Image 1 (cartoon, rainbow, N blue to C red):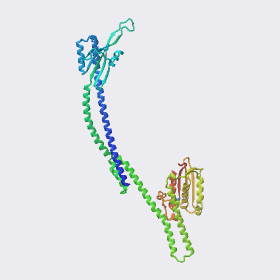
Image 2: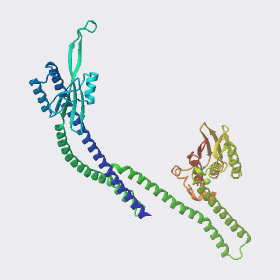
Image 3: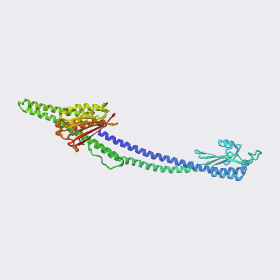
Image 4: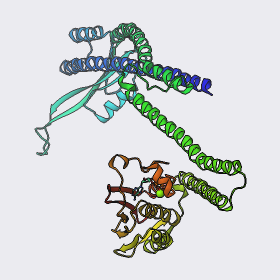
Length: 493
Ligand SMILES: Nc1ncnc2c1ncn2[C@@H]1O[C@H](COP(=O)(O)OP(=O)(O)O)[C@@H](O)[C@H]1O
Ligand SMILES: [Mg+2]
């Protein structure tokens, strides 16, 4: 599993690297191509527009000349003919003059003279009397077609006063011109070729850059992978140290934190196992010693025999208690899912627990009282919470002076209820307060053993409280007494 695991991570890194490379490369390539086509397109549009506007201006001037020299009726004017030829030459194109009968009066190519033109634009221009020029760019054939109306302005002389004196404009004919865009195409061609060379260069640079980025950016992950694999394989459980790349610092930190936590868990598991074996062994060793010493003596008096057997019975009880506590603890470790929540009268529950503890309290002449400020109903696991109260009260009685007292106080607000167990006992030294919840921890081993403790009671209590999302706190003064406060939410689940 280790081998395939590490292989997989390496594989993932490799495919990540390839993906990274492809993404960077494609992004570069696409933006390059888009830029190319956008720039060339906008150059072409602009060039065509400029050319077309320029030609239109000249054509309008020419159209005026045609009217002034009455060219539509008489095409013999040398000046106008020269002007027409010059314009045609200038734009490397063709100029056709058409009169209002759609007849061609002049063609600079000298091909269509006398023919009738029925091009849609021309007909439109004449029929609607449209005064504006129309231009159309034919990219495939490389020319701009411009239709310019030849307009005559005359002053209206009529009897109708509202119309008389005004200038009317009449379309007398049309100039149909095609302007070659070859120069634009040539420029475009040169530009495009230069852009291509540039693009190849840029693509090469992007290629190198993408490769560099994908290698450099993922290099830190290689180191982590190697380090993680080493830990996984069990060579080491040392934290990863390495050059602190910004990208991986957090991963390394998280991994090291995980490693620390694992170590703590592992240590506590080992300690637990060794504690359990030790605790379980102690009563057995005692029993073995008792039994052996009985066997070693001949003719044992009946009283001695009874005494030893009583001791053996006590050790068996102790073993039984440890096993029961261990089972309770193990069950408790199975997370909050294991709670059986019901609505419980907490005051009543506490009373029941105290009733069970009274005989032990009486044995030590300890006064056991309950003070509850109000009725409390909470959604809790009844069995586990009574285990909590029982363990706290049991401790308060056990670690108390004779003639001492134990007071249990109950209270609640709108969110939580509180169980306080206050005693007049030995107290717990300050440096032990942190550890009393640890499994098998006892402040005074010999005394606790004498009293019959397993060191599991508070561990069980704390687990049960945590399962309910509650807290447990302790305050203690040596030789004066101890107060345990449990705070539990009224509603669970
Ligand atoms: N009310 C208390 N007063 C004094 N010491 C206490 C009290 N409660 C717990 N302790 C100390 O904490 C240790 C752990 O308690 P616990 O987990 O219940 O184990 P035990 O089985 O020994 O009672 C006890 O051994 C005892 O030293
Ligand atoms: Mg206890």
